[in-house]
Image (cartoon, rainbow, N blue to C red; front, side, top):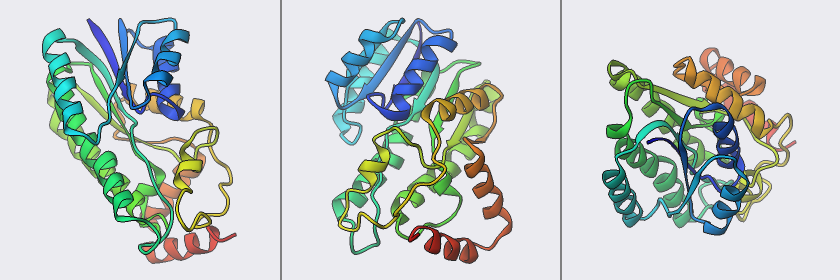
Length: 256
């Protein structure tokens, strides 16, 4: 059985990935993974392709044991893995709790790696992995420090993994969007004591265009996809302008 697996599937980009995969990818079933079972079931009811709702909390070890058991029992051919599960918080070092810092690292980094390594034995030649990263990975971001650092980890991990699996004919792509409107991310990331660490989110992208570019880039086996013009501009600037200058500009922009 050919399947796609999408984490963080209950809302936002993950939900949009489910919609576009169901229309564009040659798979028999989509495994949708997230914590909220009701949201997954609601999503499965409207997709014109078999969608298996799998309610798991990827910050818990037992979730990976459960998923490993499912993979060993069914031995699917994973044609596409999308690691979209993640979250962030705004604020400086004194304003974000240790629990939230740990959560960002555990979900954005640790869970992503565990999910990837768990699925790779079931991905054959021509299969693809999309690691949902962020344009924040291109440079340090005060006020979004741990989140940006966790995404920098994802970017470096994805680039290196591209080389490690290229001999197996597997594509690995880091998808790096800018702010995305019409998702829960912005409202979630602002839930800290300093909810005005970033005051406005100009030129935010739409989920549909971000997912479209991510899927397209993965088909062409691009290591990194800048999912929108702002992300592309940010990526170029971070290559040629010293980070201290970029950070100073960011410090001004986020207060406007």
